[in-house]
Length: 204
Length: 393
Ligand SMILES: Nc1nc2c(ncn2[C@@H]2O[C@H](COP(=O)(O)OP(=O)(O)OP(=O)(O)O)[C@@H](O)[C@H]2O)c(=O)[nH]1
Ligand SMILES: [Mg+2]
Image 1 (cartoon, protein in one colour):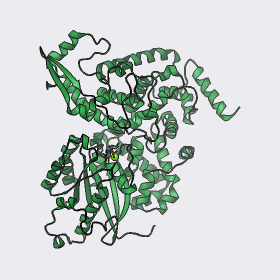
Image 2 (tube, chains in turn red, cyan):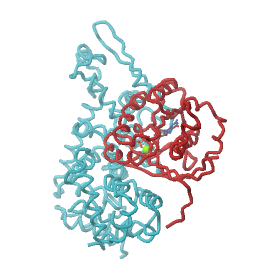
Image 3 (tube, chains in turn green, red):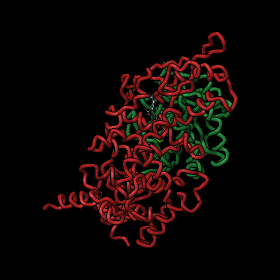
Image 4 (cartoon, protein in one colour):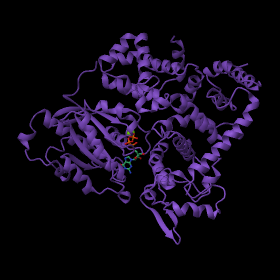
């Protein structure tokens, strides 16, 4: 078996309605490319990417799930092992945003209680077709106390950051330092914080 | 005579008979159908039971089914207030408009149905646009567009109903006497899948209509993602039939072949039947058991890595391998799968072979490499896989 080339292994999961861009987001993150035509995900897909965070090599094992209801029995069995979950909606699709609540409920039902979550409003490059404004995304994230970012897999906006923030949050938790170091960390504010110390170390 | 010519001759012979010997046909097609004449399209029509073995029944069956399909389009594809051929039928139009308009919410409202349809249509739309992206076939215009759809200023094109601007702003105007007119704003998306010119349509639009009609006619099941991957290869075969008399009717013929095939694999697509006999979990278990009996070492290795069969075999089996290989290989696989009277025993053998062929790599690999290997099966000569599968008893 291959030699262990990482210090930590984090299992992440991407969920959200069909067509919001989960597969594109993952592809952008793992292969730094965008193809506008992906086959739809049937069941569950898988990618690996290793990032460096605070001097630690972290292997991210990322599961990309199918969005349609039919696949939920297959995909919810993966929630349990996940340490971080990305909930994705499409800013040009109202329904996908409304369903975020449904996806959150799914997480409550099937995932570990302390799973780290993050909401992504994807396709933010399509401003002319936008129907969900950023404030609504922020509001729902605040309401549930989770992180939020708008992303574009196409224009490569915030994709790497999103994964790294999620990974960092998990790291905080695993090393048990979160409250000690940063008691009042209001995660939503971090999105404007491009030059936050420590951020550049991640995935640089 | 070359082997290829000999094979062609065998097919010529079998199709020249008045009554096709299905058993013999199955034996022939099991080894692959030569890419000439209408052999493949015709074989599939017979193997899927769309056509019966008696040649003299074909003309009638085809004529009836094709007329029926056209009827489906007239009744189910056109927006309410249209009845296909006679557009000037003002009375009828007004009759509908009087009691029924887009804002009436009664369950009987045709408009209510129309908007409900749009929900699954939206899903179909996303998927047909993502069908076989590595080849350009589905983006090409068909030589045989559906006449009653393509001459409608876009109005009867299904995808025009679900472009975001249409969904969010079906403009309702009232005129005198409760007469309601809808202005579906038809702003076109400037993406790759640009709407064709009036009078033309792309193959993906045809596939969209087939799936839409299937979902309408099978409301208990509706549309489930992945059905696009089942209809795709069938449509491809029918729409590239060298015999233009057949190709012209690719849409209708494909619809009935697809419906027949779905009759056999429908359960894979129904969540509540996952655990039932014939459901997808049962299929995955069959594969798993076969693997266990053929090669315990590899079975145990995957198990110890907690690499559950559903990570790869769910998609393999649900889609009859259509996402795992390039289209020509998929078509070749389906020749064999459709010839299998004990459907889907041979499919399971193929899947099992795919794992066994990668034996050495799998035993070496860690969990992640193995998932990748099985989810992105490496390029391979498909005949190697099929020959291996035949050798499994
Ligand atoms: N403009 C724009 N389009 C995007 C972006 N991300 C994805 N898309 C488009 O959205 C479509 C769907 O993307 P996918 O990644 O396949 O969607 P998915 O969430 O994986 O969908 P399922 O596999 O069906 O659950 C693709 O055809 C892309 O072209 C983005 O950031 N910007
Ligand atoms: Mg996907």
